[in-house]
Length: 184
Image (cartoon, rainbow, N blue to C red; front, side, top):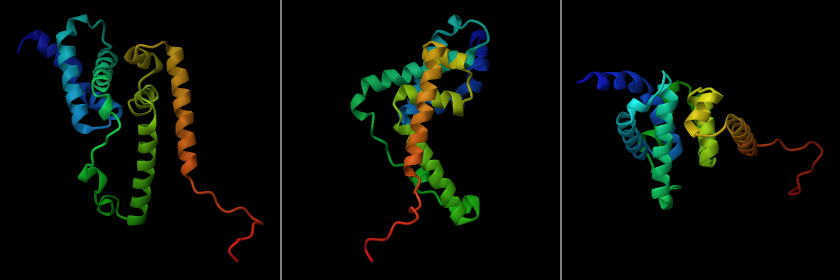
């Protein structure tokens, strides 16, 4: 292994979980995310000499983002299909959390949030994932997405508003006082 390969591995491999997380949220499929990350890491290795400074994470996530968008453009007709994952979608949550009611509530809440994030358009989804899940700064998100920082802030604001609206719409509202049941 040569010195360039060792430097690349030291700079890029610590960010593999973040790269996969971003790809998974953008592509909404585990296998496609793995393929996109692999393609992105190959691209990153090829162009590693273009990296300036120590900001490998935003540089690498930008390459992952571009690989995901390339895949979405090439496979537009498959963009809304989500494959059933038996472990993810039907795990025994009672054994994981102890109290089955509490486990069900946690799982249901997590699924609602995940579904709300997945329903966002990719530009909104990516800023939410990069900020809230990967905890990148606005500056780093701007670098990853290749957009001005003001656009990052407006997309993030809009994405949060869309999530808030989607999640509030799912909360059951108690019946209003003073209304009679028409079935009586």
